[in-house]
Image (cartoon, rainbow, N blue to C red; front, side, top):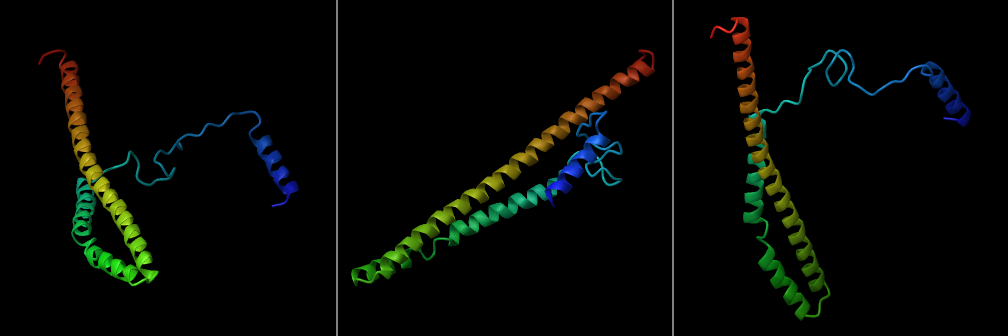
Length: 151
């Protein structure tokens, strides 16, 4: 885009909006997409949360169980190669150390995801209970007003 074209577009935009202020807001039709699509807040499906948490936990367990299977043989090979004056021995040791760091990062991430999904599931269950209690309390109050106080 040329500079002159940019300046022209800015001037046209300024003319269109010169007498009013525009705020960023939700479109009048409601919904996040501004269209006729689904409206309302984010919905959380407890089964989906549980599935993500379970998958993360299973991955954590499997990585913890099998992720270090090659550690002993790799360290033995690195030590033997180094003893025989092969530079590859120290390289193999460095690779093994990097693997351990990456494995630990992945284990930490899986544990974090699993724990967070468990926490989120419990938090939303608590929110659901609170909201239903509040709504039922309001309904009870409304009935009291509708009956003219005869409960």
